Length: 252
Image 1 (cartoon, rainbow, N blue to C red):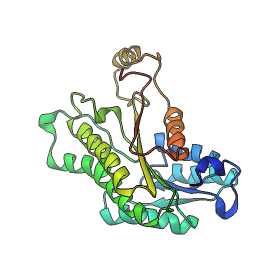
Image 2: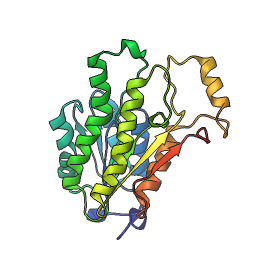
Image 3: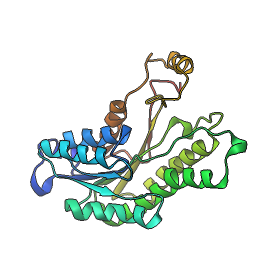
Image 4: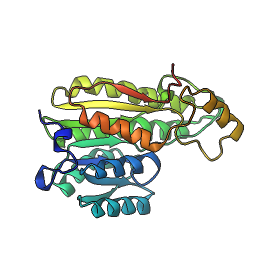
C-alpha cells in the first residue's frame, strides 16, 4: 500500500491526496487543515458559522499551490453531515482523508442539563461524526483511506460539570475503535485526544495555572501539537484503532 508519506509535500497533479477537515474555519480544525495543506494535500475546509475563517484557510492553501475548496454544512442535520464527504470528493476529484474536528464544548451542572442541551452535545460531538464517517466510507479511496477523529482526554477522565461533554467524547472514542475494525483493511480509523490545548476565555486564570502545573512537560499544548499528531496518523499505514493522547504527560 502506498502511504501518504511516500507522496510527501511534493505530490502533484492527480496523485495529490485530498482531505476533508470539519470545523476547519476556526481553532484546532483550522490549524490541522493548514498543516495538511503544507504537506501538499488538497483540502476541503468545512464550516458552518465560521465561513470567513474557512475561506481564508482555503486561500492560504491555494497560495501553497494546492487545490482547496470551502464546503458549508450544518452538522446537526444528519443528511448534510452524511453527504459532506461526497461533496468534498466531487469538489477535489477524490478523497483520501477525513478529519472530524468540529465539536461543541460547554460547562453545565448535571442537574441543569436539559434534553435540548444533551441532544445538541451528542448531535455535534457524536452523531455528526458518525454520519460523516458513514458517508466517508462510501467515497474514501480504497485501499488507503484514512479517518482521524479529534477526541479529548475527557473521553476517559470525567470532569465535574461536563457530564454531557464527557459522554459525547467517550461515545466517539468507542466509535473510532469500532470503525477501525469495521472498515479494515481498506480504511484506517484513529483518534487524537488532546489535553490542555486551548482554554476557554472564561476559564479561571488561577485554575488554568494549577492545571498547567500538573502537566509533566510543564506547559499547555498548542493546536500545532494536535496537528502534528494528526499528520503522524495520516502517514502511518500500519496504525489503526489507536487513540493518541496529546496531553504533555498529564495522563501518567
